[in-house]
Structures are given as structure tokens and as C-alpha cells.
Image 1: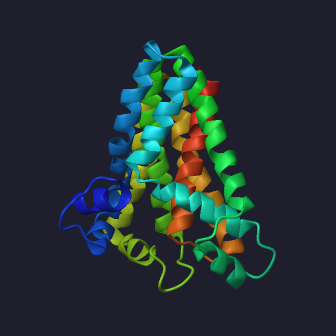
Image 2: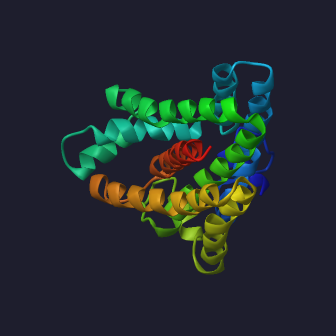
Length: 244
């Protein structure tokens, strides 16, 4: 778990390796619990600060806890999807360090709805919003895990290769159970509709990401997996805001 936290969060962990993180990737939904904690802390400031301020601090803390790794994935995927050409050309852009208009558009489409939903949630109840943040972070990592479980890497040098390879046998079974069960369980105190939303978002977003990535890039990589998680969080927060 230490290696997993080192790879997927900003926490410094000594002796952590990529191989070690891959061996424990089926526990990825639990990483969402860790990244949610700073967001849950800041969302409670909604009792003292305006909802917009509290929500902005909350989203910023969540993204910072993950080291902005997956935000980079959103930008890379956004740029690559704007390319008119072959899958090979899109894969080149996916690995390109330059930032284009597609990256800016992707950031807006993913994080603007997330922030708006958080503002609405904080305005109603910061405590309930804190629990929803926890559920959405777990769902985000669950969507990532499902993408790794059923996706095929675009190429042998992709950072997703060791994680995809590790999602076999008992690891896949354990990962699938966690991905489908943990977020809904967290959402149960919020009521039936939030729990249903938490159950369906991760698999549906992962399915859509796999379909889109296979068509656009011929498979997945680390950026695709990370972007999938960010989209899943946004979708779930928007759905949860509609249930308040």
C-alpha cells in the first residue's frame, strides 16, 4: 500500500517502486480515501466561508493530494482527442509535453462542473458534502481500476503495462469487488439515490473511456486511466448535487 500511495498521491514514501505499486493496484479504491481527507477537511470550512470559496479550496486540496498527476492526464487526453489523423498520430500527441487548446477545453469540461457541483453541495450541507467527496474519490479510483482491469496498453512502453498485467486472477476479482462495492457503501447514509449513483458511475465511465480510447488511440495508457478517474469524479459529483 505504501508503494501505491507513493505512485498515486503526493505523499513521499521511501523504498516505493513501480512494481510494488502494480502488485497492489487492486487496492486502488482505498487511495481515494487518502486523497479525500484534505478535501473533507476544507469542505467543512463551508460553515465559516462562502460556499464558492470552500468548494474551491476543497477541489484544490483533492487535486493537490494526488499531485495533479491525473489532471495532467486530462490535459494530455484532451489535446490528443483534438487531433485529426491516425491512432498513431494521436498517440504521439498523447505523449507530447506541449499544451494546446484541447487541454484547456478538457480542463474546463471536467473541473468546471465538479466545482459547480461542490458549491451546490456545500451550500446545502458541508457535512453531507464531506461524505460525498469521500464517495466520489473512491469512485474515481474505482473507475481507474476498471479501466486498467479491462484495457489493453497502447504500446509496450506505456506506464500502464505493469498495472494492466497485475490485474489478473485473484487481483482482478478483488479489484472488481472493491470497485463496485466500496463507493456505494460509503454513500448509503446519504440515501438510496446517491448510493445507486455511486454504484453505476465507475463502471459506466470506465466503459465509455475504454470505448473512446480504443477508437482514438488503439488502447489505454496512464493518461487515459487518470483522465477516466477525473471524469468519474465529475460525473458523480454532478449526480449527487442533483439529489440534494
